[in-house]
Length: 124
Image (cartoon, rainbow, N blue to C red; front, side):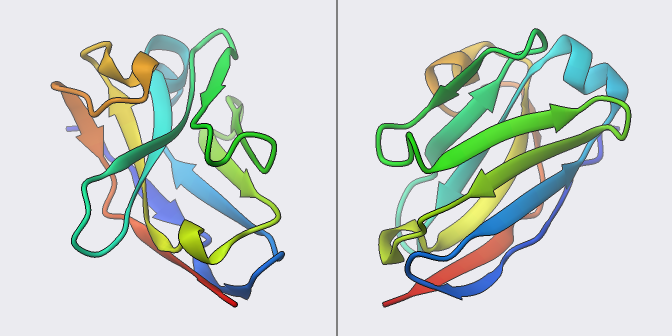
């Protein structure tokens, strides 16, 4: 019922930047906590950042000061601006809509929707 689609991933050198986009809905942005998770091969998904409908944001310590989550409610797009990228940022990045409340703590939602993911690769 809910469609989320990420784009903007790619390969960059350490220190570079990427901006990820997530096409979502106006209803989701004004109603639910939205966010980004990432998953490296063989590892569990890690909460990266979230944004509440009022604009309040939260970041994992590993990305704080380098990543910025934002939303364009007119275009119904969720963004993740990633600066000063490091090789350890390499992962598949997922857009997520939370209907459980867990994402407020950057934990995986029990109820919600996930995009298919977009690959980010950062080389040394």
